[in-house]
Length: 593
Image (cartoon, rainbow, N blue to C red; front, side, top):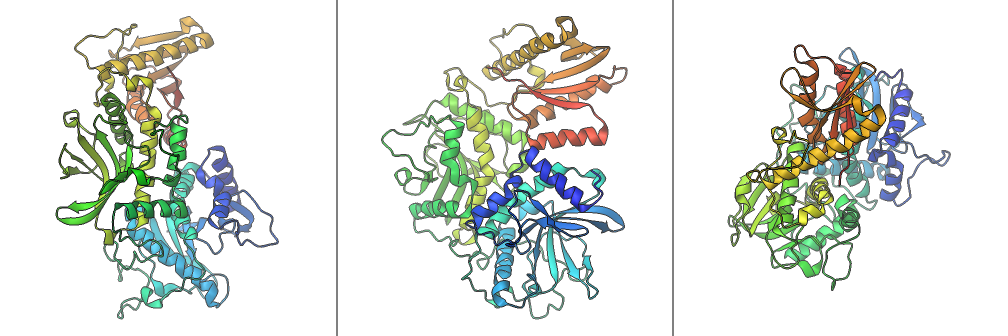
């Protein structure tokens, strides 16, 4: 990436967002939904579907169309510490327009308060970002501060010529358009949370922003360091419609249902998502009417509830009970390893746990801030509290309850905390339920242990020995089917004599597939995983060894083969490897029955 100016950078971001299906590409549609079609844009400007609009560009920066007085998606090109860099992320202008009208300033105060609340509740989501202040000098020039770790915006800055920026600064040579768009997608939750919760009638007590009496300089500096991060206080949780003080589990669940719908959370569409993942075949009880809620009244127990239809799925789960003698809310996702009414089979649950382990291995950062524990049959005492890890085979006993999430005092959390955690776990739910196949519901025994490439078959048949586990057998069969399907496809394209299956290298290794054409070679490494990231992780090291170990002949292309299509993040990852290290890496998917 090496844009000549801010206009070129913004235009290419608009194009890439649409081409690669980033959520931020629908920002104008999202703005209409959040603001009930009242965007408040200038009447002399035509509507646009772009993130950025030409008329909103300055010499070196741009903000999203309509974002002048919103929490704005922001771009800037300028020198930082003597180097030309791109700043990208979000910004809040603390002085809206050029007016002293208090009614105009109220939404700014509201945005700042909502920003501070969200940051305190979800601090781990901003661990890789920096925060800075852009301050207008008397001559009109805006001077950026150095980067600080994300923190609460001091209230006494409201009305000052200050812009607060949350994001990153990078040299163009080490930055890709996918880096910028990925961050924009991640910050959309913050944007929706703030802009959706604006209410014109809200008043703001200035005391809620007052600094300590001895604080002379509200801006962080080397002499005025930021305080250490702390847990959310009750003051921060006093958001309209967000207080959490449920009398019972039903009140808690209904509050989550309501807040999900009004807060724009992805999990609010859970029932639609379930229909998509299961091809409209939802195994709910036939005597119950369909619902659009996450939780249904008929599913409530005395102190817990799981999502409608979630008895035998990875279930979004809520509980209100005593843990270690203290009333707490338990919220997250759970497996109940048990046969009973509405349960499919223990084998299907083992398959779900296997997919859970696979996803966790490929995406460990997706579970930051959460805990994993289990409760044996007949016990309500959480055991094995730990950071999220793979569920081991030896814990799979009928009646065991596995949970990933949090347990918190109601006074320390909000409905937004619960729903943000549910949204965080939604990709895990989709991955598990989407990848279940008829084989996962058979009576054949399975294993939750992850497959290892050393156990993959290198024979031309699908025969196995009795000593090997059913899971290893299943993985080997899938690997070999994928390899053979791809070999036939390549043979039809390049000729049978130019495609070699399991070709040995001079170092005693075996390459899954090699194509020879016009004196050039292409190496293929097959990985039978549903998660592309795991395929890339397992295959790239092998391909590099085949290609570059001492005395090896360098191939023209190195291709990772997986079961699923590569997503935008995977494409960005491969693009980075190719640009920075000149590696001829590619990815290809092969679907097998």
